Image (tube, rainbow, N blue to C red; front, side):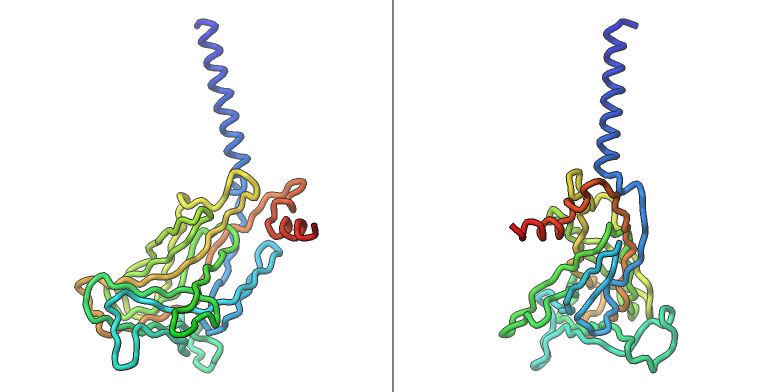
Length: 265
């Protein structure tokens, strides 16, 4: 083999090594995992929410609101869909203790005037932001860590509808994820895996780039009845990766820490 060929092989090997090193440094946190289960929402009617991850406490205030596509029914002065909290829950998760008044579920009561691909959005909103008949201002829930799975208990009445969950990534792109068909009876735990194609980290510091939960969307289908239906939600939970590698000066990659430091000047 000629000397030029040896040099070409050596250069190719060197380039591959440097590329692999760069990838490892950029996304090394994704190679080590520390899975933590967090209940983001109990659907018990409270507006104050708190959870802890990696020693950091997250506090957010939000409540749930509902919206629908244009054929949503209006009966006299009642506009559908309606949303409320009811004293009901999945026995598979909490048992049969009906005297426990702390256990509630989020209920959606819907009606449409026409069959078709109608939709109902259930989204977090800022408490007290609804003014003069206008809908409340939406609030997107910052999901702690790098979310791997989202699961939730959903009550269905064997209607051929399906449920989606929407997430926004750090670049502002919204991703709809199919959670499952609602053509079953009673409570069922629905789960969706967050695909690796949705990036939750960056090459530059800070590497962490978590997702924001935007909303749930219920879709009806053209051949299914839509004149009157009920759906209930309970215990919205995520399985998330809490691992963050440490290094000298890692506090300067924490956006909250940086903001506090620069606020002193």
